[in-house]
Length: 434
Image 1 (cartoon, rainbow, N blue to C red):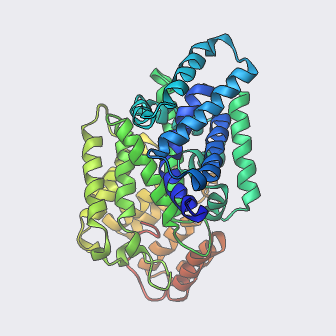
Image 2: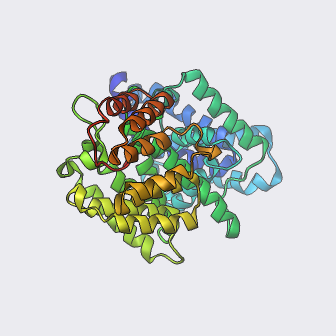
């Protein structure tokens, strides 16, 4: 007998690491993400019921996967699915017979290693399908790829659990209704679908890096989950420059976490950070991924260029050593590859640091009527910073207060109001966010 709490603790660890692998293998059988997760969860419940009585199996992941796959095969047989499933059913029946032998666990582990990379890619591309809204893609990806519970996702995003649960259920139904194939797309379709996968991973990372709401400026657990997913994808698609570029960007940005927040939770801006607290291992990993991106076929994409910008900061031992002219040039390239008002705003920051606040302000003012930035609090924030550096303090105060009124993050609001209160003391910091 093993205490239930001990089994639950071990299962939690196994599930967090292996949920995607188990779900992916089942999804290859049933071709339905919702059903695959349901059968995987059934296996988890079965383990909680049986392992305290019977003991932990030698290969827990193989046990869970075999159990989930058996449930899937039973479902297929019961519902007499289409004839094109017959080969899969025969394979799974043979698999079940083999798994009952005494040394099944070892052979099951060997079988699970076959094509697992393809299965994980299929799972990731399905969960991140552009048919779904960005919010739904993020929630579903964290659920099936990250092994997070609905409650954990809800707490991470400061949403009611019922809202997240409904979002996930609707996403699965939408995929099933549209008969989205459980596959990795080919040719031109791969480009579009890969862009959706990368977007989801980076959205999750950014929500952890700079939380859109709540009282914490960062939620590092979300960022590190996104980074883990990015590393998995990079290992599965090593020749994709944009995959390596995104991983490089996240590694380097994550290296600053310890320096981005003061002990009391107050945000610390990039130019004010203690760079000795930046994580050198994450920086090194980021630079290595950037090198892989640079040597991949084709011109650099948006993520690789953003990673190159992050690398400029990472290589500067002090804020004043930052090569802002190189960063401005990289933003010029980024504006060509992925033009957007936000990229233009970030370019204005770099230009302001490289060539003077007046040059930066001219670019920012050109964005004043941009509809996409109408509610974007960083526009008045950047303008306030440039005005303060030009000693136009009354105008700067107004901009910081306007930015504070726009943000939904409590820590960021307090920082902006503090900057408004002291804007008569000129600052030379760079952008609001690094």
